[in-house]
Image 1 (cartoon, rainbow, N blue to C red):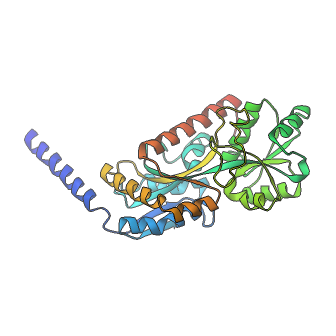
Image 2 (cartoon, rainbow, N blue to C red):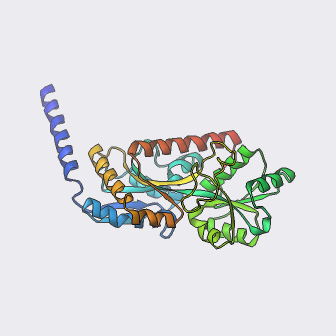
Length: 320
């Protein structure tokens, strides 16, 4: 009996290895857990054609919005782990939603096999021209002289942008008034009009206003300066050591996907991201493009999740 089981296991391993070697033999579907038009969707549509060329198969983008990205993420988590259904995952479903939602239909650390990062969108600390703030020092001075009066907008409560505001205020030792909106669009509109003083937002959403001078950018939230704004300092450079917040984006497969398949997908993503034309398109969106190993991507997700969990517990943040 033991001999039969051993033979069965060896046959199964051999079959899986053969299937992985031939992968892919049919079109691959990448799930975007948001509606068309946003950064995640645009990024997916940038990489899909060259990724298909690298793999020798069509890569189809499938938008499955709902519940802040949770529905699309859950769909991939429950998909057959064969490499033919992938997730274009971002910080929302991977490291923010697990902190603010009590009962997610997936576990971001256990239910996915990370393949590679694609890009990270820096967040930027913006100021309305009407605020009179020309530097982070100006903002801090105002916040200290008027505790709880300086307004900071975000794309919504419980977003990466919101967490970035709370982290900044905590590290700076100031009290600000967080003003959440339903998306970056309405928040940016109010910032442009001077209804709010400042905002932390994705550079991809605000880069146009920064470049035409309608908004002032005071600092970048990533450890490295943004490729699109090389002259703007980071908060870390300005003395807030260790400050880091960005919107990470990459490809993931369901947990249990054969390692040879993950390796093939990783090699294809690296080939795509080595294409200077693709990288330049991402930089034009205000993103920092770059592939990684599956292990590096997994570590990034784990570190982000731990960072936000500690922040929420420390500040006792509540979400409805």
